[in-house]
Image 1 (spheres, helix red, strand yellow):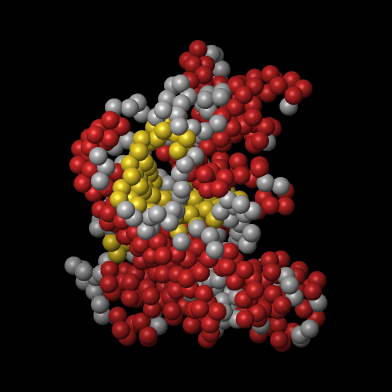
Image 2: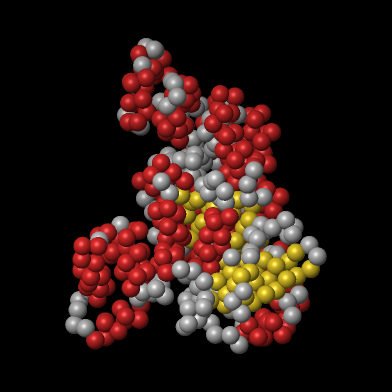
Length: 540
């Protein structure tokens, strides 16, 4: 629910049947409330749900979505807290998510899983000067063949052998279930991780079986050697890079080896996994994103692709049910299709925030655009957020059917008028309105533009959140630091309550900056947090 300029309620229907597709763009400069708006729209979805939380995959940089997850978790009973999960990615082995993971129970990827692997491997081969892989057509064909070869090698011809001590959880499960005593030493020396997975699954120990499954998958470090296999070398061995004497296979081998070195978080066996009950996932890229150089932006783009797969890679699986049913061992159907049937019945939301960090890497935007075009038939609502309207490639702008505009430049008025049918008088009037949150607390102005089946609807609206929500979603550095200090002492729920009571507009930045100028203190935020705690007395 939002409201109009005169304060009247204005109901918002997200992923409405009145629209042919559900692609939303939310451009907005820092400080205007862009991330808060996206989270407010997510709250609309959650409030509209019935028994279950909606499926939401949120890829963010800057921790705003982590506040939304914490807000949801604090509202759930203990036994349901796994339904909302926040992940802060870190580029170290303890946070590894193997690029080559496939569906639990499978030995090779389903079509969307393979497409993801090919996209990331091609991204590792991108020339940062052009934003495209060298020899794009040849490179993609080689990478596609390489993925097929990897799963033939490690799924059929030479599956990886089980070795005790690799996964303590698996070893313990084998002992406690009695499986370890069912075979002699010779059998165990030749046992594969796939066999271990199947036995543990049939014994009902899904977590341990999942760990065994992860150990069976191919790894990025193994791709370099596979490029030398005859099935690839004989076909592509003489192909040279465009405008270079270097062999294309040598370049790809070098790029993949560098990727293995640069991205340990996707180069080993998976170490963390999500509960099958999880419905809201927020993945934050703050600690793994690159800098503003072309290479840094490529790194950020690759992290967006990986995070999108972690948070919502299974959203498209309902469209591949026949393929999955045909190729997946029937023993795994009950576990896998329970999730697929849930996904098939509901609208899913995939949010990519702060995408300006991948600006200039055309390959990444093309991958997102391809996803977006395909997802319209999969019941997926896609939200792409960046700082400026011009950050979006033309293809994305043309395909979008919803805009949430917090600000735009005067020279962008003709584009919005001609391509989205927004009346020029509305566009000019919105630019005369103050930016950001109104001082009187009446909300943040937003120009909402909806392409519907019978035309275009454009309306100036305001969205307002209560102080508890504002303090959950606020991502400004000083406010986040104050919230963090209180949370460490009192927990997230009580911290938000205290902050909402003392700063109902959702920010203490002005007070923090004032005290920094006028108080002789080494840590103004720590002192303010301690003061707020003291004021509670016995009411903590």
